[in-house]
Amino acid sequence: MKKIVFVLLILLSGSLFASTEGAALERAPIDRHDAASLQRGVRLFVNYCLNCHSADFMRYQVLEAFGLTPDEIRQNLIFTGAKVGDTMKIAMNAQEAKAWFGAMPPDLSVIARSRGVDWLYGYLRTFYRDDSTPTGWNNLVYPNVGMPHALWQLQGEQGVKLEEKTNAHGQKVEEKELVLQVKGAMSPKEYDQAVADLVNYLAFMGEPNRAKRFQIGTIALCLLAILFIFAYWLKKEYWKDVH
Image (cartoon, rainbow, N blue to C red):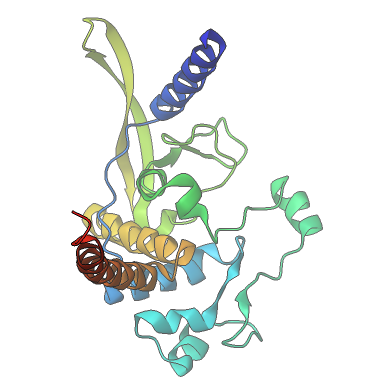
């Protein structure tokens, strides 16, 4: 029993350390039922993410679930010879990726499920210039990240300044604060909305049948509740003479 408690404490402490690494996360303001947001999000994904990151478990035709037609998908979201029924693959191979980036960029099909939408929302908003890194970029949520800031033209360039603050224990600590140094094509509010749209789409891509699954589950529970009523009446009728 002591060994089990010890193992649980180790696992709990590890999760606590993981949760406190990097910057504090904000709740991602996404709505999985907002078709317009999902359409804006997939445009950003195709234009800024799909160049390096694949989505091998996602087919273009699934985008019809939030209102896009096959013609709209073909004309606006497919820039290669792929068909609407194909998966979202990239032309870059593993050898080229290793030469350019040192490793193959990860597939993003289920990134929202593995990292969480709040983590993604914070990560995409907290890039800043750092000349000490190979890419010239760093990130508050994911320190020393190897990926450059793909959305810098939209957000602009942020710098970081250290601010001395007093924590809950009365100790003085230095915290990093981001400051916009070079404006991008979007205002900070517009960029935050764009990131929310992109994260919304990433959440959809990780579980495109989520809404349908919830609907089927609700119907199944309602049917079970109705069957329970009939089963209870049958039980009372069967045992009425015994009691």
